[in-house]
Length: 54
Ligand SMILES: [Zn+2]
Image (tube, rainbow, N blue to C red; front, side, top):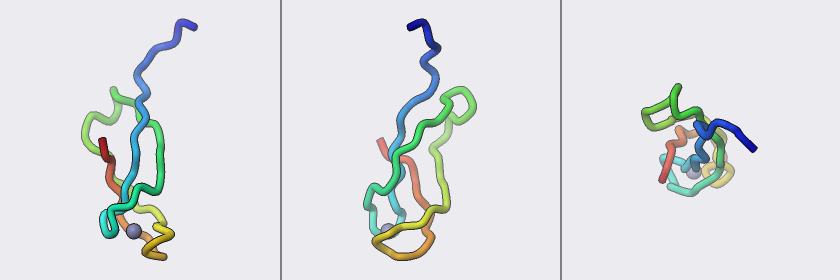
């Protein structure tokens, strides 16, 4: 398949408990900086900021 490979798989980890709760893909051309999202952490049982991990 001739598909452009500019979407990369990233893992989102909770900033509080450091657990990796989500995986998502991002567009490398759009988002060169590290992603940060407010997401619900099931371990903290509230919304925390989740950051991209390597
Ligand atoms: Zn958490």
